Length: 532
Image 1: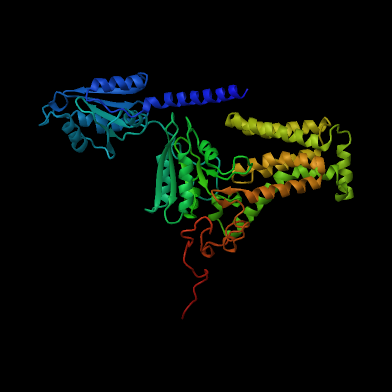
Image 2: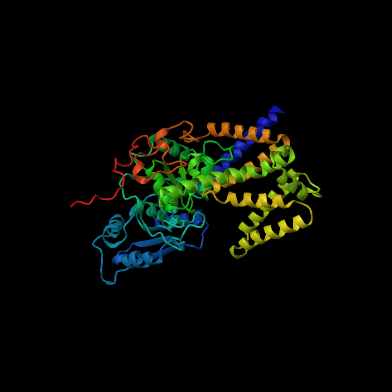
């Protein structure tokens, strides 16, 4: 048996190696030939003669006997750039204009330096680089007789414009959100942080997709060790495809087997800018409007960008409300199960009699009743998300009301249970981070089972186990419960309570270890004294 097991593992490794070789062979470095027809034949062969790859040949360019090929992908380039800046430059109005040389290398150099009116131009000398450049939306110019080419930036095509974020709306604050274009997203951040210390490190991940990744941080503020650790984890990723930032999140997070997120995501440029100024690191992925932020603490998940645009007292109230709502959404059904099943003596007599009257004739115990209602609501929520937007909200709201009322009238559940499930659902939408709301959704079922088994003792045991788990979590070396565990007095000004801006003199201590000073000591705002 051991022999066959070893043989199977060896075969699996061989298959993976062969698959990786087949995946990478098309983009393997192969030097260009000095014959244009061979280069074009190899290009068509490696791309399957795809019809969207346009190859435009121009003969006797500038009166020479050379042939030039202009290569680009239809739909990935800006048509105006192709027509006005490239094709028009290669076909001058004066048909008698001639070059004083026939050397292909000199002709390419003159085209690059004299004729092309494009900002970004570079050289290409191998087939893999040529194919990658073309598939990224650039235009490549080849000339017969030269084993080099020119790559001109012409990225364009159809893309979504900058719109208001759909998942993180605010009443006061910027209304712009990220798009699927990574360069648009980096530009949105640079508009807010006009500093040369805003550094961007580019990576390409995915053997097939070749997805662009941008790691952004403020040099001199972000922790260099954290930045290097993030880059090292990105470099270790070896996969075929990266289609969304969620792929990156699962590959680089510290602990996979936890319901709590150790990396957060946002589609708001102002949230990224504020986090970078605190010393965090942002990871942007081409093709998705959701950027990643690390390292984070659990308290960051209850904070919103709008907290910093409102008065500090309102922001503090809203943060406390979000934390309370999170606890309610996680524990309220389990508390009802525990008290109604094991600890009826904790209820006032009048309320106990009312609940007993409601449950008279209910054929199921409280835990089955709660699980059925919670699962029903989760089904309605998922249906509302997947259905068309015009129908989704109506289905989720009307469906919950109709099913709840019908279940009460049929005697399947009590009215109190419908109220508890509805309030739990509303409380789960209060947190600004969808990730922490999903954590509460998962933990809710675990606490319900503990409550049905051991009552309040089971809930307390679950809370203790959850607290121990939270104490052991790290986000790129940062303790998850910072600044409460470890307790850092200077960082308490912007956690659950937000003090006025003039009192927040320092950045988070453990996050920005290089430069923790945010601003100088400023006098407390007060009216100017009148002088006679």
